[in-house]
Length: 258
Image (cartoon, rainbow, N blue to C red; front, top):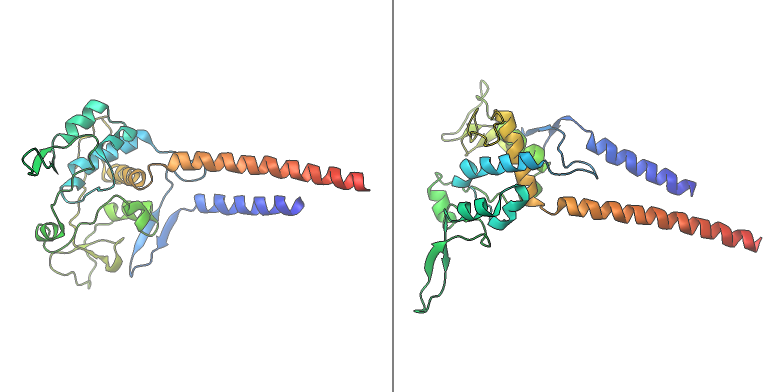
């Protein structure tokens, strides 16, 4: 039993240490530096910051959606970030999707519905590259999972645009960014002070917008995160109770044998 307790304490210490880590981290790419910060979803009891999720969706809708798709998210899923059924219906209806065939055997376009996936801004990759000087804006559905230190990467990327330092050769059409590998990125700075006017009245500083879009993309990548953590806690509690019962049973059996 003592060994079990020691192992549990050591594991808890590792979890706490990982959760409380702050500062900056040198990422995998050359010259890539990420700012680490605490997020509401950190730790086993972490939860989504609902007001931030809704603001983050506003940032995506008004800024990011013109270039970046969110192909794994349906419009109806946006109820989880605070949109009402009517708001979802109105937002979806702004876009068209191909449907059919109709009675004549032809495909047709119709307004998007809540059950549809969020419509991509481009019909295909070639159109996307043609509209962005050859660069391909990635889908953001899993960005928070796909990148090293995903949330910190997204936040650092949004806040990492600066003038290139002396002696740094910046290629034509590129921007200097401290969070991007090689420090050159084809995407121009997407966010600035007051890029959006938040519906809830929150001041739209660059930092606030960066936090909100990060929270939204973390949700998009793992909408089931809260349910998964809740289940994990229940399983851990069950295992702790079961371990205690088995230990008590073991002592009872050995006591009877002696």
